[in-house]
Image (cartoon, rainbow, N blue to C red; front, side):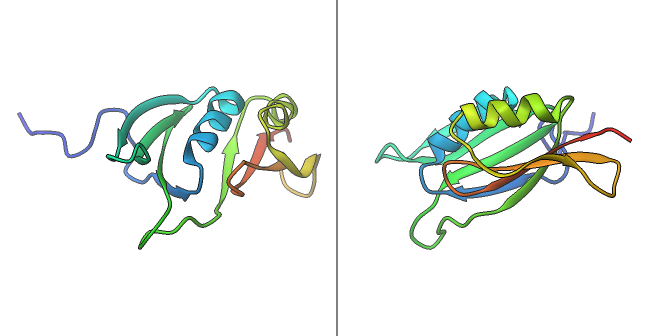
Length: 128
């Protein structure tokens, strides 16, 4: 039998985020998207060297930024069953509104929220 080349349930490509205050981002993802924490490795100083959370069918990898691997903000797009409810959850979890959910010229209703580390999460539901 051939040995698997990746963990079961992982896609071939995963987002990897470097963030200042990565635990705050993990907490935000749990509260907003019901993210499930899969793995966590902390350094001797207690900082998160590597963590993984699953949001629906996607694994997001995270690490505390610093030194030769500084934190930097990214934009991410997530499809959810109810964009309005998820947007409200994101705000309740400490997110800052970038754009209230709105239907524009494509089939999606989309809104945006910044997490505690400054990453922008575009949240959408296909409606038309």
